[in-house]
Length: 200
Image (tube, rainbow, N blue to C red; front, top):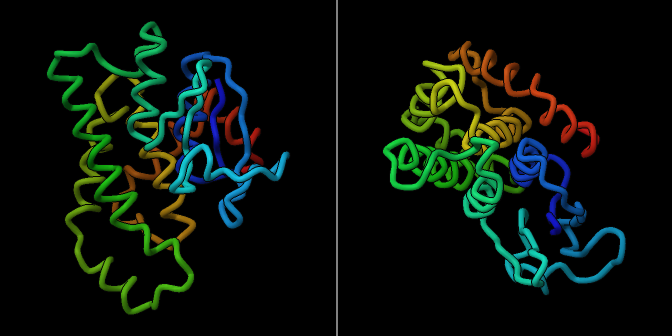
């Protein structure tokens, strides 16, 4: 199995999930500027025509893209890891709800914040709607994890997006529990290993 990643990108969530699940995989670094594989120089677009990470290549050569789908695949490949609740349960639907929220409202919704070419006025307009950030804060309010007592792939995803948000200048100081949550996630051995491997 191969995980295509770029240091600090949202693919960090899948890297963390692999380590949490103790699934062996080769990590293949992608240069997101040139859309090439860093070691070989080959085009990454052959693996993912969108040129985005993460993507996971299975032993049969098939490739799965989109972060939420990759995260669920990893979780379901190692059910003993408890990274996702059983299918058919309400908790599983809550996981899907959280993954969808992070993917659409935070990851995609705030993507312009990460682009240096986007004018400050547009970034300010993004920040003028507090609803997504209030919802984000509510996810970590009860704790210790999004689904309660069990760390899930939703936590891995939210952590990676909050890291990107901080780098883009998002201010979470109004929600002190977000800092507490980030510290809890960062303290997990699998997360520390992934961060160290990616040089973060």
